[in-house]
Image 1: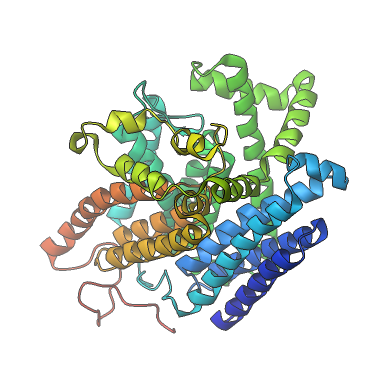
Image 2: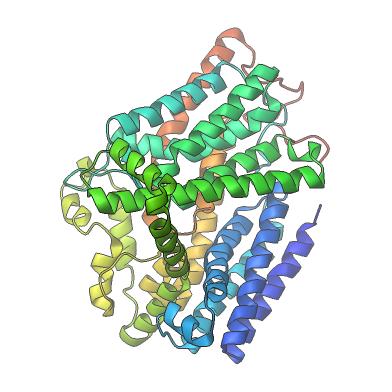
Length: 490
């Protein structure tokens, strides 16, 4: 197992790469730094998963940002056959500008990796004795049923949660979207820890069904569910039972599955373009399958899919544009933050919330003030910070997000109901692993989780209280009040 000190040294390498980009901005330096950042992101991700007790919120956030920015830059560089084509794919942005943007990412991620060695393990509050029971079965069946209802009622569909004409989402849509990631994590854990072989098979099927259910919502959602399920499997001790060859085979199978399902999602995008946004999901699914299977459409599909991959991976471009725009016009000093906070307030408490919802996206509010075109962009916590407070804002917002998520983990793991604790923990993990989220896309799920957790805790704890025992766990004789013990052998 790689010690935390080694992750800290990798953080120092990322920092040095960031400073090198500032001192020697060039395409060669950019490519080298991108490869280094993406490789370190993969290493930290592997250590966080395989090490069980090596998982940290700061490390997960750094990993997500490195894989999004550096990994996307590597993809763009590899898809460019020449320096001229690279310039085209990066929309002729000055190499100094994109090097400065990547340097910002590296400095922040390097600091996150360095500081994370002193952070408590995210999985520390999960009971090592947790197994399946009536409540885990209820959660699995109820969660799958909620997702099905979301699709049946039209609250879920292509690209995820659907909104009404006023831009609002339904309770079912919000709940179904919230439950997908953590349900995959809990099911992945119980695939290892369930007491009966049939139960373990059941939870493996739950993972598969959740993964298939998120295919219409996006490629990143597919990868996220697979990743969170893998984390659950690892926390349950499943990876310890696999040899290196078996792990490699599992990664290969997962990669093929992710590629096929991601391709199908893009086929759904083409089907939506052909049929229009008003088409039903079954019609979109049918035409999407035809795009993939029909020999007459396959060549067109392959060409468009390749072009899409080439053009959409360079998410660093927007951060570069924002840094330049804020440098010229100045930051907005909290305009985006105010917008996000008001989005989190329930409509019954904010009679003027319709004015905020009418913007539809933060770019509509902030881009005219910054002199940028109003189009949907690849937002992250770093772009939010730069928009509001410039370069310093990126550091402050990233640090604040880590503190917020650590606080959520701390509060959730004070509870004594193991499945509820696991569900809440996986919710936070799944949020941190999504790089392209705006601040409200962290805050709103946490707000919704705050409503979910007490209900789940009461439901799970009541049978135990009535019997004076524990449901769904084998409780060790010595237990800290209000919290499940840390793993044995630590």
